[in-house]
Length: 149
Image (tube, rainbow, N blue to C red):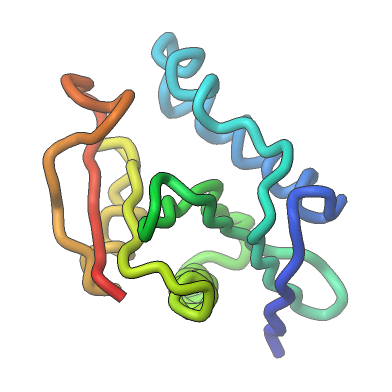
């Protein structure tokens, strides 16, 4: 059985999962990884969701305020052996619920074009593609999405 826990970026399970995420992204992003890594620091993220199965942390995601009324989805990761079971969708739904509870009207996010499974997840979860925002504007390997809550 999978359980979801709301926490923050001080949670050591989150820190460990993000370490695995960063290693995975470094491999996929290659020489462009330093550009993306600078926007993915986890210090002081107040809203983190971790999935646990059999006492093990297996997946995570986070939201942080982008601007008034808008939360940005960050640091989505599922351990390879737990993929394909709908866990990332559960985490994303929990993050969206949390954002709505806090009074936010929209979630936005960025992912890489090489992240085919992530793109599929976001489209399946009701996200619409938008022009690249902020630091991702003009970055060819980025794709951005939004969802009204």
